[in-house]
Length: 266
Image: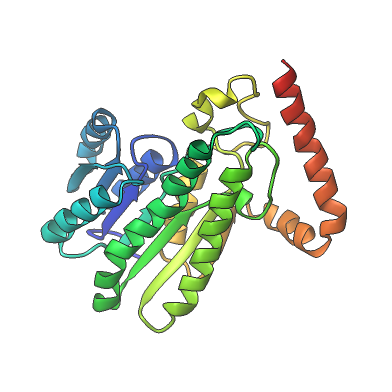
């Protein structure tokens, strides 16, 4: 797809994958709407994108706040008339045993990661269907396919994203609107800056750069596929896990449980 002059909205745009994705679309000449809570970071990114000679709009917004999303979406549609590509990228995790996390900490992950996506889709999907055009990209994680100790509530939110997206994809058949999930393995971003990860090694040797994932998001924005796993070789691991769960699940569970126990004993 030629993304020149296409209207692209990105949540979680102030840092990490969202920020890098904004730069990739700016290179293509897209009009970009930058959404995140931190206005200062959005201002800095908007200034950086000026060199691409594109239209940008910053929208400070907490994606977990339904009324804020509703107000922001009305402002966006009033200014641009439509959104061609909606990228739901905002998300975070809190590391720890479910027994140690508060109910509010578990709810906050689901509200931001999952319901934040739902709020944006509900506000922008009607205009996409009306125009018979548009694409939704939901940034999930390989954790959408693997339930892991220490990040159970985060995994639940990503499982929910993938399941919701799959169901919606069937509903959208014949409407001209597409939906694709991007599921990367560990990415080198400030995702791990949350205090709960303090005693954990930040990145594994196989972790990905933000740019690699951002380029996958760009591909996803015109892809007919339901899910793009990054890197693609990990799709084999997902297949093995789903085909031979009685072999793989105990190994994964034991490995990550040891890591979690080690963190708590430090």
